[in-house]
Image (cartoon, rainbow, N blue to C red; front, side, top):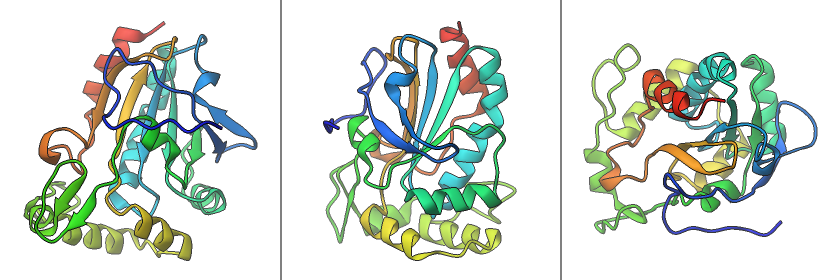
Length: 226
């Protein structure tokens, strides 16, 4: 498969490239072109399942699936996790009717223009480089899950412990390769053109570790439904 690379995230009006990935929740492949010409699709591109923030974003997408389907919109969850590890996870943490694909090489992230920032000691060049002081100055707010706003590392540790999540060799390998991989959601119309997006790549990372509200997603979906 030809690899597509973009230096900036896709924006509304851009045509999404075709990406072909291994399906997690059924055998075979899933491609962006499977939907083109047939129905709109919400594509969620996430870090690996080792990321507690992404696990929650995936669950949120799963919860919206029925409402999206009612509007004639499919949803596709893509995770930076090897296929067998992903299948094992979803076997024990099922999301009904979830359509998901494994992308351990992050082909889709690059094709949609989501950077994998380099962490530095003191240099910031968002979204390609971020210094550790800048990262640690961020605060993650998750009322009901975190006892208080926390820096990303502390928040991640707290959530991993709360979830009882045990890192595997695959998880450690994915995290080492793409610890800061930016994530995003892209709503494509039936022609495969982006009509709405929410990414962590926006200015200075103000969307880092955040999830679009269900109301925001469904409002965008109403504009491309049927």
